[in-house]
Length: 208
Image 1 (tube, helix red, strand yellow):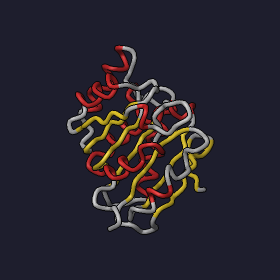
Image 2 (tube, helix red, strand yellow; image 1 turned 45 degrees about the vertical axis):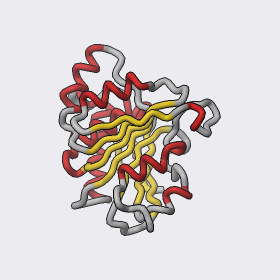
Image 3 (cartoon, one colour; image 1 turned 90 degrees about the vertical axis):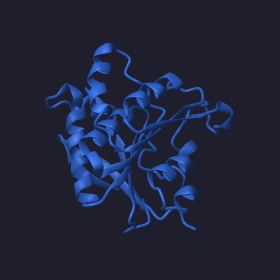
Image 4 (cartoon, helix red, strand yellow; image 1 turned 30 degrees about the horizontal axis):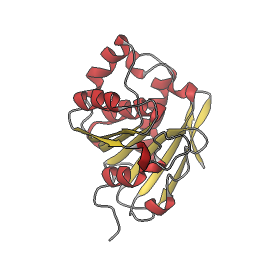
């Protein structure tokens, strides 16, 4: 486990996969499994280095679109520093799951062409008009080829995916039927769709 300074604490992250691989993917998640390989069997089939960052609820508070030194804004700065230090001088893939999705979108917009592939999984769209107004211009700045994955019985549905896909310049939607998800509560998780997500964010890296 490695750490990067953040406010009066540290962000935790872990690297796995193929050290020194030409392709790198940054994964943003919350919870106890945030820095664990989503599916070792799938990851082993790709020549890719994964940097998994664990985020907590306080680090996601107040979107950086509001400006100022909000927790989420400072988290965004810490993540930019992490990418610049750990994966310098090369384009990367980026993944955001559920509540970490908005930070992934902000990071993709802030990094420009450095993030050339993006996937968000189970991410709800903003619920209030102010948040929608603040997010829309930012999504115009996401230049990454983006995959929006929803499905199952979780809170994020097709309407959420379509909201993002209409605003991100290059985006497509993938809807997973609940019957296809091998999860306890029927909610979509990154582990359940890791194969298609990794193929998207690490194009050409699958081992032959």
